[in-house]
Amino acid sequence: MLRSIFAKTTPRSNQPKLIRKCLYWSPLPLFCLLHFYEINTVRGGSMKPTLSPDSSAWNDICLFDRYSIHTLHDYNREDIVTLRCPTNPKRIIIKRILAVAGDTVKTRPPCPEPEVKVPRGHVWVEGDESFRSDDSNLYGPIPAALIESKLTRILWPPERYGPLIEPSIPINCTGPAYRHANDAIQRAKARRARVKIGRPYNVDADTY
Image (cartoon, rainbow, N blue to C red; front, side, top):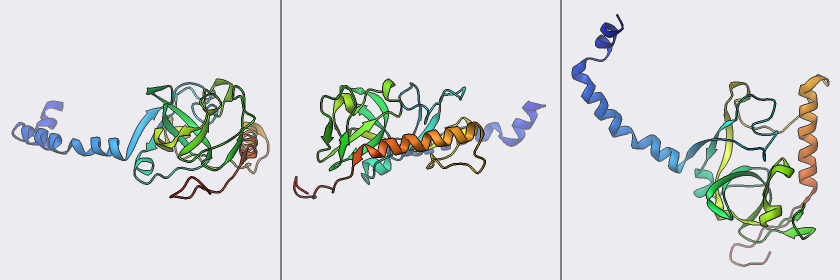
């Protein structure tokens, strides 16, 4: 029965034509993945609980935007980005941009300086779970050229599908949802309190 249905929908005489058509168009999705978007699985604990939280049985699978980074150079504070590790370019890591060029950051150990001013062409990145994260507190400001892509939305698991949105207190101020939202708000406030926003560098000079 299944064989007869298949024969009606896709005759054998048309199969080579269908294969050729698929092969003809196959470079298009590959081009889009290489130049516009990529899909990555978030493993490790440095971005918990924002990504792949302990409350989920799955690692988050996310869509990342390459075009905005490589073509538009569009990135800013609070963006979650993938970047090449400064000490091992073959390794891709995921962090949050805490500060951009011109900003001053109150650092955390093991950084030897209490404050760092982010130089031109660099960003300061950190993991949301600081004690699990090797980030700018270890490497220092990271060249923006190492950024590969930025997070646009979570694709899997289904209950977490969608873009990351600014946390807000739910109407019902009880239960786990309230505690999680309040915790996310407090963590965001603590991050931003460590950054003194500076003026961007001039395009044609290393001054403000």
